[in-house]
Image 1 (spheres, rainbow, N blue to C red):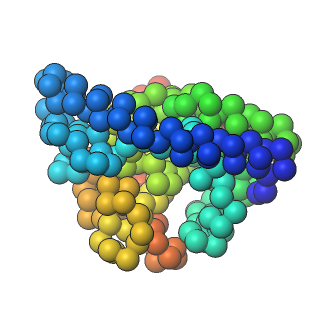
Image 2: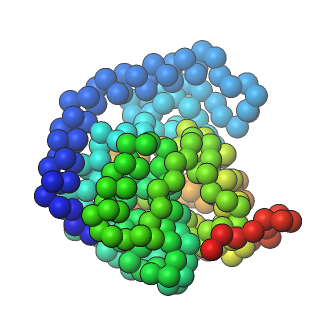
Length: 266
């Protein structure tokens, strides 16, 4: 869905601010990683720490260094006009296994780029646009008012939990976000719990196996690494669709039953 001129101008200014502040943001992230290296969370042996690389935070999960987070000052990049042509986001949305009454969680929703596109495909359902940055949720609320799409709900999560009820979601979508999660195991498990039995997680990540994909190494993931990490979260691999020019379209599923007393939201 397109943006009104005023919102486009605001996002352009936001992108400019992001570019100007990128160095400061990177330095702050590296400082945080160095602190973590000096005083790691010894209570959780899943993570290791090392001196951060240029694009990482120095925190290691299953052999993978976690990348820097693109903050809300990068909102303009998410809404760039050429994104659909470059990434074929239209094909991404078309290939999502959606029913008209589905409850969808857009994890790391950012500006709601996918949230509002999916909302049109679930007129009897709803989209939970989850982000940990209140500034992104403000943009989503503004777009909701502009579009009149009342079936989009902004949800404030945190680094360990998206804030979704257990067994409440038919499909969760993560687009180029998972590799930035500071606590991928905890978030993966929380997302898995939020899925209904048989519910799907669609994980979109730039192909780490392909050196031709012009994305920084830590902002890409291989299919094998993705499957390994999703299995640790309690999800089984279903299929990988070859429909996007640069990204993996990986589908995972929750197989386990809901805990006693867990009720699906409608």
